[in-house]
Amino acid sequence: MDIVVMFFLFGLIAGLLRSELKLPASLYESLSVFLLLAIGLKGGQGLAQQDLLPLLPQLGAVIALGVLQTLIAFFILITFGKFDRANAAAMAAHYGSVSVATFAVGSDWLASRDIFFESQMAIFLAVMEVPAIMVGIILVRGISKNTEWKALAHETFLGKGVTLLLGGMLIGWAAGPEGLASVKGVFFDLFKGALALFLLEMGLIVARQAGDLRQRGIFIIGFGVLMPLFSAVLGLSCGALIGLSIGGMTLLATLAASASYIAVPAAVRLAIPEANPALSLATVLGVTFPFNIMVGIPFYHYLAETLFGA
Amino acid sequence: MDHLENRTLLTIITEAAIEHALLKDLEKLGIKGYTVSDVRGRGSRGVRDATWGEAANIRVEVICQREVALKALQFIQDKFYQNYAMISFLQEVEVLRPEKF
Image (cartoon, rainbow over all chains, first blue to last red; front, side, top):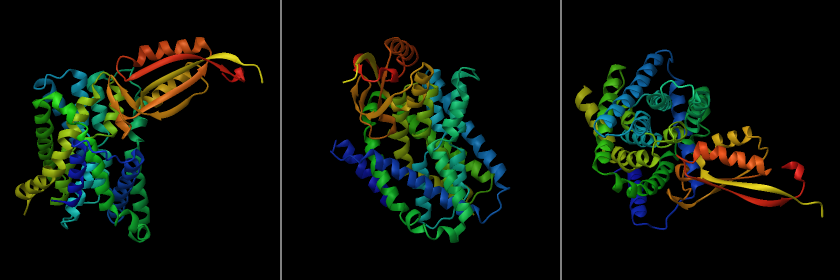
């Protein structure tokens, strides 16, 4: 088992046993800033060594992927889950968007096995965060004048996650490998340790969802596992379509399978207030996140190799 | 001591997620100043322990004329009470420099 996953399990078990263990909220914040910047820098550094124009159609493809996932999740939740419109759209937005922590675990899983993946994956991460939020809101409100689109666009495009990722990428791109050599010790060498600490806190957070999860029943658990599997297959197909490597396909499948628990909950809480936030968070954090980092990522890699390997 | 005058203290305890929206609304209602603090606690929506963003609460305190406070109270009741974790209340306080409030 991967060392970072062990930290996650440690946090999860400590949380389930109601241990006194509690990390300061500011540490969680600091670690997420660090991880976002490091992912951005690494991606930007890679992008400095390649032509950017061919990426445009790829960006279009991953945006379409995010929109499609949101619509499919919405349909499933309305039809089979008997969700009302607001809760279905809110939950669908979470699943159409992406999770940075899952991406970080996925890229680390690949890197520690020396499996190559493309530098533009970091851009995909930034780009895929937003469309699902917009689609989710439109599914509830329509193109209503009452929605404060300007404030919402500001919130999503200039939210912490996207800003840090793009900022990091820009710096990495401008500085290139030589420029980054001086900060490499902090941002690249310490990455795995920081990720481990972050996942310890994630374990504690996930443990807190257990109570909510118990009340919601079997459909939520089924959806939390089957939706990412389905999305991963969509992600793999999209990756094959735009010609990614096996590592790139695995990571795109991981992105597709992951569900947001930071950017989307915050935006949806404002834009779809009647949706119950505990419902989405329990599913995303209690089921999908642990499933992806423990079982999903190795499985998506296996699928990529089996279906598309040479 | 200078002359003390009565004003109303409006306190709102709610989800950190709506901080920006709420403060903007308060400013539109003519409220000139406020204090925001990060807080945690427990209520009908469970434990809000502020260990991370989604479970964080804030407390907004505003000192103003009673009419303004009542108007603000009515406004937030209409807009936020149904869907958000929120309580708010009024207290009478005595202040120096009443022209500030």
